[in-house]
Amino acid sequence: GAVVSQHPSWVICKSGTSVKIECRSLDFQATTMFWYRQFPKQSLMLMATSNEGSKATYEQGVEKDKFLINHASLTLSTLTVTSAHPEDSSFYICSAWPGGPPEAFFGQGTRLTVV
Amino acid sequence: QKEVEQDPGPLSVPEGAIVSLNCTYSNSAFQYFMWYRQYSRKGPELLMYTYSSGNKEDGRFTAQVDKSSKYISLFIRDSQPSDSATYLCAMSAGYQKVTFGTGTKLQVIP
Image: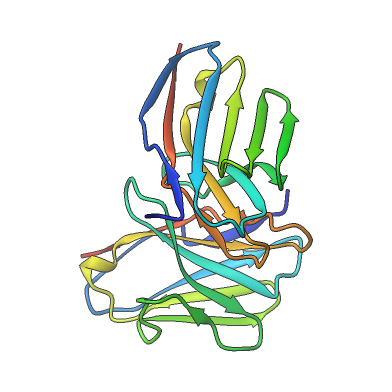
């Protein structure tokens, strides 16, 4: 299947700082990528849809100024958690579509811990 | 009511057993149905993908979709300890936005 790479796989940061997470499609171009958040024992919750060359579309309840998304190229989308707080600690996962049927391929996920 | 309902388990079975995982949904617009496997602290891995109603088989895995009942299933034959993971059902109306179930944690005991 298609390969989506996410970096870093884990990060610890101090409260108030910003953290950037990268999502790359390695063997295909993705005009659209998705960012999810997953709490322990809970499902993946869609945060936003990242569109290459345009603004991201955020789901209801997701603060766009806090979770900045940039999709500057067809193979890279970034999520920046700004002014992180302990409640932002979670597992963040990106996904991308290689085209055709809606088979989403996921990155490895990023475990963010804010202390 | 959630759009997708999935029993979180955990489900424990002996090695070699047939495993049945299920999801129900309420959105009749869903046409694409997927099953993902997720190991702890890893991203989900696509296992099976089905369009509309019917069955699909891939090795030890069989996916079934019954749109009339809004019910989907994943069967795992001859289960192995390496199948121990969380299984997520996922659905889409065809616009790339995917809705996930909460996942069922499966443990296959040697």
